[in-house]
Every structure is written in C-alpha cells, then in structure tokens.
Image 1: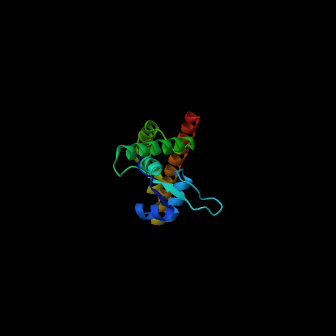
Image 2: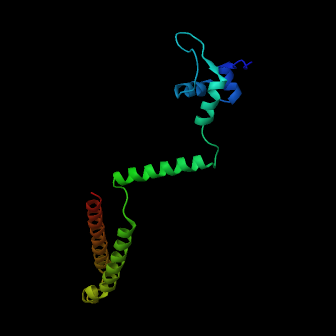
Image 3: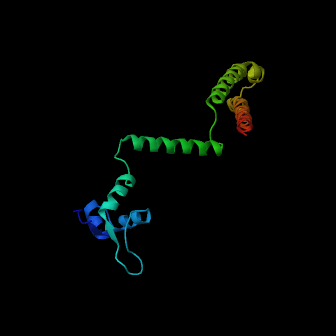
Length: 160
C-alpha cells in the first residue's frame, strides 16, 4: 500500500527549510510544484513533488563543481559583454604600445639636455629655467597621450 503524500502549507515549508514565507513564495513563482493559491485558496505543497524541485533548484553547496561551472559561465558572459562594449584591449597591443612608448620616452627624456642646453645656459632666473623644463615635460607627456589615443583607435578598428 503506497504511503500517503505529505502535504504542507507555505508557512510549514518555510519553517522546515529555515526560509521566510516570502522566500517560499519566490520559489513558487520560480516553479516549485504546488496546489491552490488563487482566489483565497490556501497554497498546499506536496513534498513528494517539491523535494526533487528543491534539490535541482536551490543551488549547489559552496565549492561544488556545479558552483564552479556556474561562476565560469558568468565570467565568460561578463568577458563577452565587456568585449562587445569595447572595454578590453588585447594584451599583445598593450605590450607593443608600452615597448614603443618607453623607447620614445627614453629618447625624449635623454634629448632634453640637448634641446634646452643653449636656452638654459643663458638664463639666470630659476623660475625661467623651471618654466622651460615644465614646458618641455608637458610637451613630452602630451605626445604620449596622443600616442595612446592613436593606439586606442587602431584597437577599436581591429575589433570591428
């Protein structure tokens, strides 16, 4: 003779699972098998039907393979979205740009004495020396901003 099904209310299932009645309502909205619940009818949950759903849908225990796969899938989706929004730059382009930028920076910085030597030699005012050096430094930094903007334009064209 088959066992009689065990049916519980939403409040009883909440107590059994340690969840709030609102959480049980959300589970019902998510597909937890139940009877009633419309036009003043009391919600009744058959545990024989509900338990398999709960096992499949309540989430995996922390550290499980299922949780790891879900996290990887979310990461993959986030990466694809970032790529679609053009928020990523290819590592080889960054490496190339940094190599080029550092090479040019070295040349520009080492060229400061040669470019400013004659001007600085005739200046007795420290404020004027400082101004000349600041102007040259600002020019060098602006050239790197322009180079970065150019690399970004090339990267966006490559992704299109």
